[in-house]
Figure 1: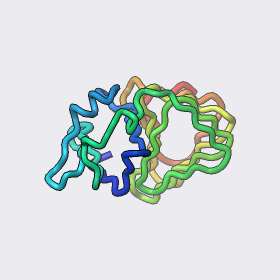
Figure 2: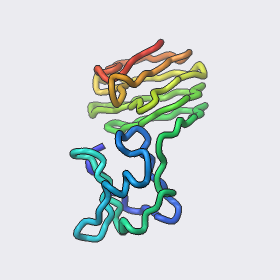
Figure 3: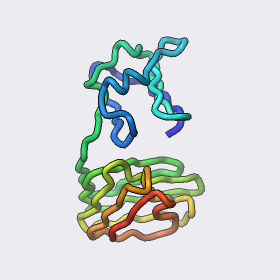
Figure 4: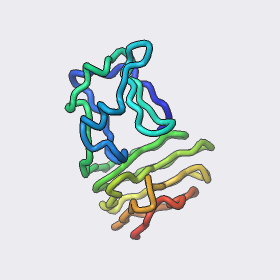
Amino acid sequence: IGNDTVHSFDAAADQIDLIGYSGFQSFAAVQAHTADNASGNAVITLAEGQSITLEGVHSSALGAGNFVFDQTPVVNNAGTMTIGDGALLPLSGTVNNSGIIALNSTGAETLLQIIQHGVTLEGGGQVVLSDSAANVISGTGPDVTLVNVDNTISGAGQLGDGMLGLDN
């Protein structure tokens, strides 16, 4: 994740998904890790070396409705979902994939990151990794599991990276 800046966050409507971040289960936890920087922008410190800066938004403008915590989402994909070179797609919950999830690294680490509750991958689709060792399917910890019910995973890259359980 690193240190990211959001340039167009609308405190009246937008949300930040904190699913999978240890220690962030409530708005009170966010408040304890949020302060305005010298420019008056809200900075949320997630972990050492990981933060989100909301440019043009003061921390006092944020409320509980701006954050999503500990949900088990369901994702439906009937088309093609492409993770571009150097990008990251965090997933949790159930993924009904009847299409293609493509990791398209051309050299930079491209990560399908399985978070918190793990993922159940179903729907008979495909997870296709381009011809690059920099494609990575990994978890946020060794206790996170990818349950692959019926998808085909193919291509080049790393599966697990020491941070993922696999039930295939």
